[in-house]
Length: 486
Image 1 (cartoon, rainbow, N blue to C red):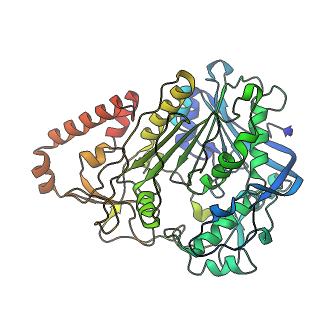
Image 2: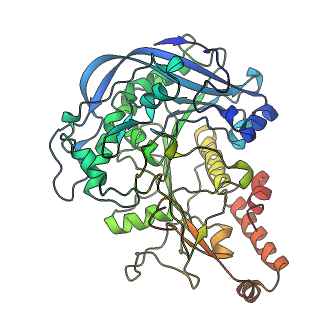
Image 3: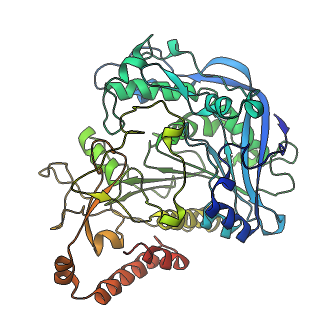
């Protein structure tokens, strides 16, 4: 692997830069972090499914073992790596979060938890460009980089797989699927798109592991002078599709000296769970209530937590596919719609609900606590905590058991559902199926439930203390969670 960089840049030239956000820029300044971009090149296999057959009714794409099989060996690539790191190597924790970019949201991740811990973060572009819409227009990935800044990115190239390798991607099938495809619902159209998404990640596994192995070396690393002791990876939603084959088919083939894993832990949010457990690594999954309702509809069996291999699964009641609503000061510009053709149902289509307002609870600190627990499991052998799953009820319309307010029972319990101020729904409306909604209680309901505002806040505070005790919230983040209360 050849490395070029850091590539000279300014905030307007680098796509997905943290510097475009005032909040992120201030956070990086506070903790002494910098942003760099590198170009990397080499050769990598192009992967496809084990079989090119068309799926039969009831089968999912996973039956084809996607990205498990070499279709074209040693194909040249050149792509980018975006790095967020401490300016001072002396404060580096030794932990790197290395992620394959989401096919649409290839943006720098800057979170307080990561920076205050001294971790480094890097994103690797491994998507050639996923085709969207009736015209099958490539969006995201390298195709989007060519569009937004051809002067900077025109030399980049990542190979996509051949559509003929995928049974559902016959000529015109993808464009036809988008006529009725809705990202809020499963179905045969979604299987067509899922194969297209895998196809656009076809060169991703080898590119990603090239970067990860480089982090462990002194010569082929984008973190020159930084001693890396742990590498974790994560992905949410569409980004989890590349993580699943990484864990299922490639992790065990990329062990490093002493039979150690190149990746120490996988954290998947609202996404696709690997069917195998990667050797020597931790696998943690966080799903929302929206995923739980889909699992009920699909008849999906829930995997059990285990300590050997190290696996944990969590479900967050009251939350939707977009699991957290950022405080107003942290809201980012940009969306899927920035890189998509118009009219994609469930992604860049929006509508309003007469019954529900947008979910306003910030759940990122729960994710931060789970990361802290994963670190401790990796370093100290202390297992991550357990949480029960959302309670299923076959007699309920959506298969989920609910309390008197209509909120889901079970799951990783939060103050929002145990000390509620609203009824929460996993999907706010048909036009915004990836977002949660809420119907706030009236003043009279709040008074009947809690007596006074002070009593309500005391109960919320007590529940947050319980979450801290159970290791689902870090003490330093309690005030941030309280700020979600209106």
